[in-house]
Image 1 (cartoon, rainbow, N blue to C red):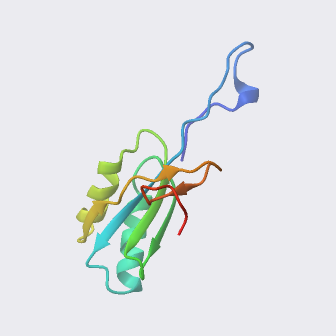
Image 2: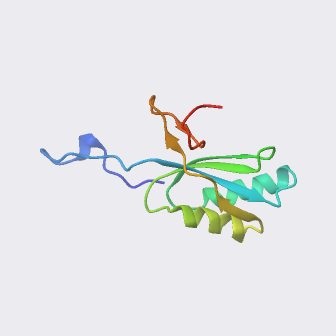
Length: 109
């Protein structure tokens, strides 16, 4: 899915930097059952740049890891195009340990 140059394939003296991985959460409206969840998973996986996605029926949220050229708006649009409501959740903030937390105070739940 990703067209990147492996470090061993790079010309001598060229530094290969892997694309930056970004994680975001999207709040989903209208998801009622596992069939809906599967439609959303399929829609998000089709977005170029998505590397990992999980959708929680109970939390009504998708957690998505992606790299460029993907953008958060493309993720929301994929869900809306599948027939559901979607909005970006609060940004994931890094804590002191490199983990992410959606709470603005940076403390875990």
